[in-house]
Length: 180
Image 1 (cartoon, rainbow, N blue to C red):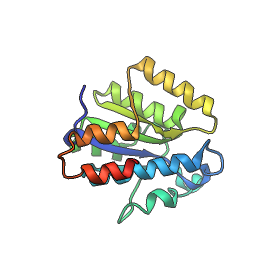
Image 2 (tube, helix red, strand yellow):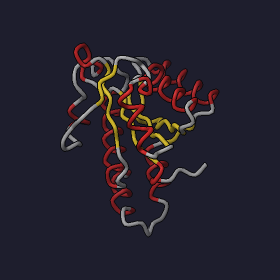
Image 3 (cartoon, rainbow, N blue to C red):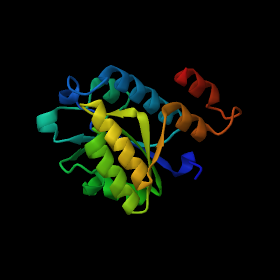
């Protein structure tokens, strides 16, 4: 299936301050998530941010929240974003079928969200270099599960160029600079 920007929405899952010291390769993850977010914004793809139990896990990391003006998020307590009625309603009324998913943790919220999206007829695309867990082994287990479930996995560079489609696209030069 070819992924087209007019059918896409982004979903940033729970990149919150309390996770910062415990997530594997967090600096790399945040840099990659910033890059993907900036690319999706260049392509005018809407992005929703979720926060899991903000009272306990804190706000979204500034490296991500600072990319949005104004910054808004959807509060959730369930692990799957699709079980949050506000997000489910947004997605249903958005007209979008492809959901680009990135954030933490790979084996919990990202995994459950991707599976639920697929079961509801959406096409989740997990961005591999923009997900992590406390243990890298958990991320690897999640990647195997995505494969077993038939969930698409991509990378920042691959998805941004697929969405750009052509070197003649107005955004091509900006996207090229971003991924280099």
